[in-house]
Length: 143
Ligand SMILES: [Zn+2]
Image 1 (cartoon, protein in one colour):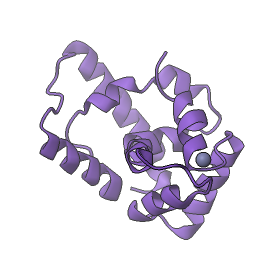
Image 2 (image 1 turned 90 degrees about the vertical axis):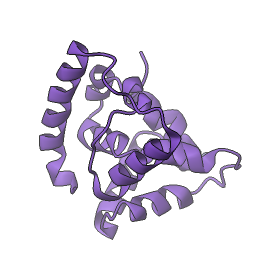
Image 3 (image 1 turned 120 degrees about the vertical axis):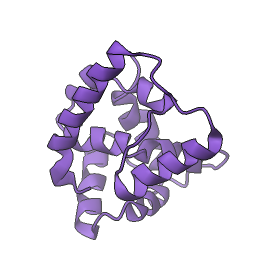
């Protein structure tokens, strides 16, 4: 999925959110193997087939306040921040974009798109991998 499809995806997300409000317990994945499979599918191809527990921490109202909400929300739903958290756990951040670049490359984004996204991170006080979690993901989640 390209970033150009973000709007269409956002609409799809909105419809999905509505559906979930109607049936809140709607089949959230619990099985670790299936979770892994869903995460990889979203990362690599942007295909979302199941609901993850992680989806519930997304705060669309809060996210929409950000000027770059379209790109950042897409990254959230494609599990970029989730995977970055995973990769960072147990490591000390070397204060580069090393892990972020690895993930964005795995997401099959072009070099141009990756540079564009890194600029958006910087604009939002995400000047390295750990700051992306502390300062950027935090603008999309919780209350
Ligand atoms: Zn850092």
